[in-house]
Length: 434
Image (cartoon, rainbow, N blue to C red; front, top):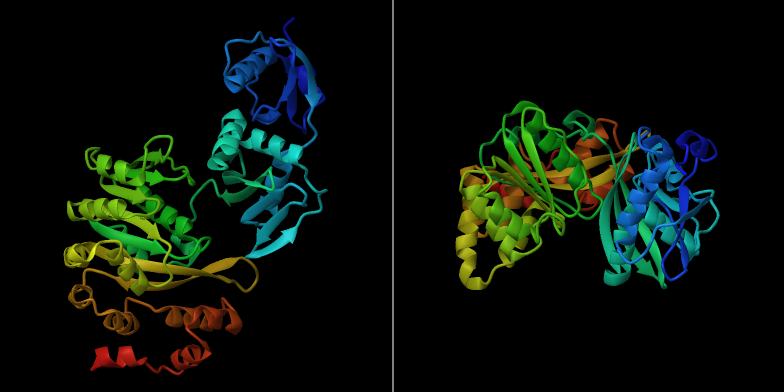
């Protein structure tokens, strides 16, 4: 008989629904649909929802569906997700044999939950990613995917195997990108968004806020310009809504085979702006430089720690006989490099400390062509539009945004901090001023 949705829902308002099904060989299994009751289509009979879910999840035509009963599976991941948001946590760690942990302002804290077991972890993975991600994890041993928690945000889920059981690292991504003002990003970075072409890189270690800064730049263009923006990501994190621009988001592994393939293809898709999630190999870098040279504004990231290291890293990807050409392409197409480090903000939260190198200036172009990295360091220090990490950290401290200890941690050393406070230039800076 058809099931009455309201009667079934009444007993399960705050939990997940488990569906026990019998296959043609007589075995039974419990499936956990990846929806909660608030997201359930009210106009669709519950048995239709269940059957549609089961047919998609089991991916087999050799069994006959027989719904035996609905069971309470007990564990609801949405409780933890909502707790993450309420405590301003950036990450959630779930592992068999351990309590859940969340990361707040870069510190890990245990949650007041019982330890999870292997079955709990399989259930959580199923709730978030469905059968496809469960199968992919046990085949590939790691997988990444996105989950949308309505009213909370998007989750970047990275699943892996630990001591034979699933484990998850979950990053919470807000539903809307944060504006430049909230991120304390200076206007010189925002101004890059108005450039018609060139390459702009946001760099830093994992978890330094690169994605957040790039999302702010894409959203600014979306709100102020009529443009076609193509993003190539692995996986997609922020999900954008078209405003003045139209945005085509592509995910590596689902919508394209690789960053390099998608980037080459993007040139035939009438783009104005291209965001490449990461330049992780020679072919992607080559395609990115080509796109920037042919009249497109290209944003991307590298896992480098300073602006000068970023220039060096790009060139080092290529064999010796190609480096002069790459230097030339980079010198003439580079709009800038921003490197980030997140510092603990006074009063809670974190704030980016930046190093800013701006391209398009003859002195910067010449330094890249000459391969003079020390000269680049001096230019960053003395140019009024650019900033070294040391200068930016001191500025944050003098504005009362971070403690002295936090500011010093972002500087080369404490001596560098004191030198900047005293207004003394480094040896590289003094050479440029001469």
